[in-house]
Length: 238
Image: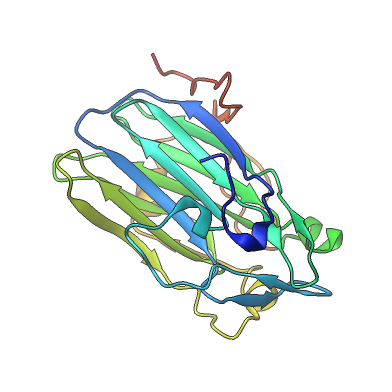
């Protein structure tokens, strides 16, 4: 998971971050991938390579911009941001800001904030970043997912159960297939699932709303992801 094999990435590795949670046996793995369906998109002065694919319940982590995997069986969450590459040969990997919280029933909340390292600096500062908040709630019949996300890129979430079955929890098409998504759609947001209801279980901090993109409510005691060599444990977990 720490390597890049796609030729466009020129061997530049992804950035991996990890956090420990309380296991919830029987829930398997819940995987979320944020990907660009276009082969290329406008990314400032140059065109940037996307992932060039449709929804895929068996997506490979490298075929995303950002992905995160909640392994309920082993009590760990792994996040990955892949390199960004453009058509003039630049390749660079950004470091996403990832954090998580967990309720006693096993519900996991993940904050993510990832910028394209090849995009002009002012764009990221103004809010042109991939960011949002995902809430995954375990259940007897399988997990449910809700959250808030930018209107770009596309997003998909699946649950891989211990018995080998795959459940589709969420598929959200960015709506852009002409390569203008970062410019046109990235500043805006939308909610999905029972987000406002699920959010009520988490103690909130007061913080101001930002003009562009989703600025998820602050969660008290939320814990930042760390390195795979010494991953932190989410606050309150055993």
